Image 1 (cartoon, rainbow, N blue to C red):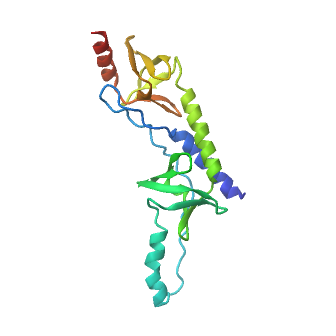
Image 2 (cartoon, rainbow, N blue to C red):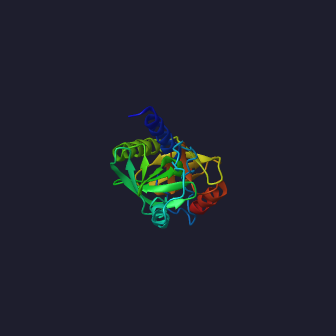
Image 3 (cartoon, rainbow, N blue to C red):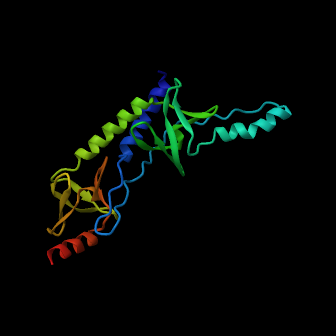
Length: 212
């Protein structure tokens, strides 16, 4: 493995850790929890564009648009590692990020992670390496949801701490001291801690309704 590929793998791993890559929590108290913050780490993979030293023959000029279409980063594009092994398929392009589906996960990665090559795209990590990094990141995020963990609201800032948690419910102790019980999937685990798609005011109202 070249030094360049080692650096790219390290950068992609950092992007995975920054994003958390967890499913968006379900609706709670008629409000949809905010998705985990999108990763902002840019990976320095450059898309290689070759220069044309001289005008191409007419037949090649006619074939050029088709070749360019094959290299477009769009839903359905195939991704392989630098040794030609299958990594996955692009399912969505969202600005400077794409959703890459492997055989196990759907991962949000920066566009800069990919390099166009013939009719597909290359990335520095193999499918097994990428899956392992996602598994590790999700496990670390899930472990952050435990009694005593701080939970942030949809507008940022702490809204409370976890008082109790099980497979179905989570009980939050709000900053006011009130307790509110919510579905377990209302709280999203991210690499930086727990997040809920409700404001402190929403949670206070939920606690008041539960006590009435």
